[in-house]
Image (cartoon, rainbow, N blue to C red; front, side, top):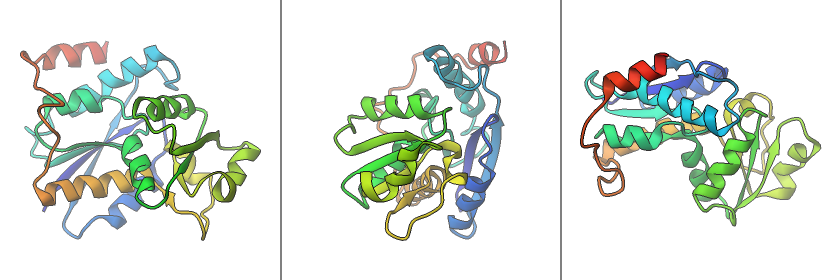
Length: 218
């Protein structure tokens, strides 16, 4: 059965999401969490995002050597996902993009509800993945708009980061919880024998594992 490494940012309480992922996983799937300290929190600027990329890359770059079959970045920001895909041959799944695409398998559009930590990064992910037409809006949890998002602004709701603990479910609107969805996606890739494309994510000519670790630890 698959062993899945889940990288968890230390500045967000994702205990409920990890528990939900364990409950959703197939019997026998081993889920190992690894807390990742970010150099600058909350990660709200481009510099913070670059440092978060490094932190996730340093934490996950030896996943294959450690015997894992897949890796999940549990941070909604998908930090380090592209770099880790270049370093690893096993499936690397980011919670953010995966949750948004999952929502579109259940509905024609989605709204993202996020905490202040993740709202700007969520906006960037929507833009970078060309999902602006399907995204009905991005709302910070606590605003009046967020309350109406379940029924008025979209057909499905993506709960970014710690938003899952702050938003009540709706019987009429599917709620996409990024960490459980990402773990199940990783599990399915392992079962299907699939991983990311080497055309899209080529291996580096020279690996710099020690340098990545040193910069991340600085």
